[in-house]
Image (cartoon, rainbow, N blue to C red; front, side, top):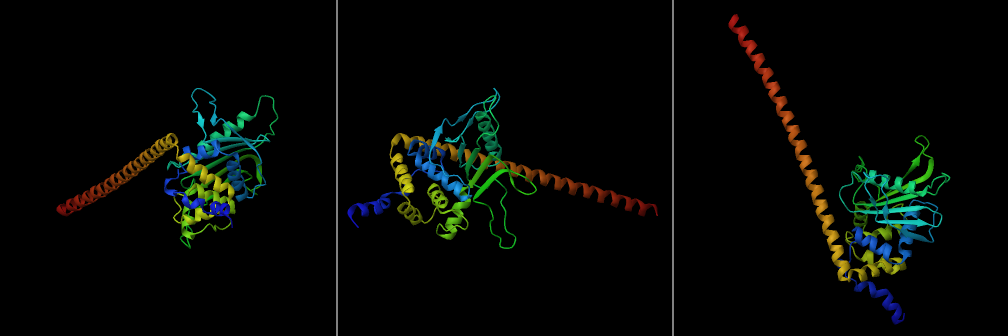
Length: 312
């Protein structure tokens, strides 16, 4: 092996992973996938589709304005992290959602899908338009956590695909909507539990990309270095991320966004805690009221017994 090959295999060892920007922060995610080489985004999307065995191989795409226009003055402007379009007109919407506030995410993604799907259809155009695909990376499950009653294991899905289907035979009714929810928390838990990237029924490149995206949560960093040695696109992603993070202006903007997400999540946690304590207090009040009611009933019965005794 010559010096060039040695350098190619060992450069990753010089990267301080603790200093890399966290791709779960939307600022870093957008920076890497919209300001760098387009093949990184293409590689990530192809891995996502392959993981659900969708017969779609992207060769080229165009990154668009991430804003979806308001329909009326009272509507909220939908801001996406990444918005892209394929050569056949298929629209792709991507969001990185590190917030703990998952309650509104499904509705938000459906609204974004509906707005993007509606924008494609011009007046007088035919209705057989290309699909609109929405992808959300989440910090937890978008459905309530499920536990296997026998094994007590968490059965939450890492990658959930939702489409318009017939409720009886589960055939796809229309390919107009395709929504992917990718639970980064569940993925990191699976990787750390296994100690490797061998996740059952998961496509290899999908797992490798998710490992890079969630590398801050991966305990065994050797997993990341091995991935980078094996995959050229992922080598490029990590080296680009490291280079971008060395820019002082970029680093400051990233840290501001990181702080915003942290404080937003703290506010969500405080609000949920306050709501939980309020519910507990209300339940306790109702319990005490029930006890008082029962005690009053007993007092009345005792008084009646005393009255009968005195009369006899």
